[in-house]
Length: 118
Image (cartoon, rainbow, N blue to C red):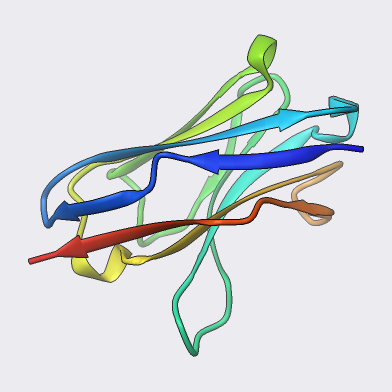
């Protein structure tokens, strides 16, 4: 059974940076694609970024292009989300997800809170 565990969330002022990590443990062959999503109260979960097993970035949401960078350490089964130039609207719970394809995320982490203040 694969488990995902996020870390690195916190509070930061607008313009600042945070780096999220998501470690996958267990039978990681199912984690061909790993992605980040985010959700704020009352809104649907929103896609942020995704990366494939070999470290090729699949896609970024338009709202984070040029500011966020997704990367992957295959040997450590860990995916990162470097978030720069953070804005108040980036405040959300960020979730790590994994699955066999970018249209089939079957595993989710518990989420980590990111709060950006002005």
